[in-house]
Length: 169
Image 1 (cartoon, helix red, strand yellow):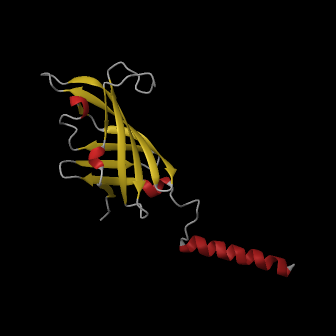
Image 2 (cartoon, one colour):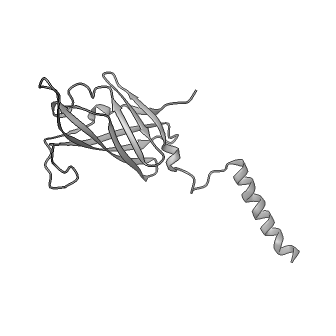
Image 3 (tube, one colour):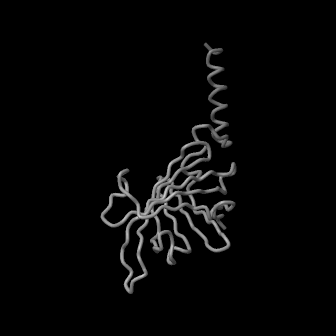
């Protein structure tokens, strides 16, 4: 009987040592907490700040949203959700409100649905992003595949630029 407990004791000691020493396991690698944080992309003409929350929600703000954007509209902060779709690979969908500022009083002109792809570097501190977006007029269901957008756009301006995680002091 004493010999049959020895392998179990050795296994328990090995597991305890791995836990105490912080050896990562496959189950822990790339959890939502690995991506949660604040990121910025600083480009020559604009900047963006993205927050990824561990619960799968996200928000993004762009420095040029108060100027004329896609379709000639200004737009609000964007709110959305994200999920992991592969190693260091996330997809996200954001919504924002659009406004026509060509009139004396800015008027609501629709909602944008913007789908992003984020490919993280191995250290998870930077990532490349791309996006495709559609702006739908007021009263249109933006999630109905039959709905027609008033304009479409992409984020080609992000080509060659990376978001970087904000370090803590």
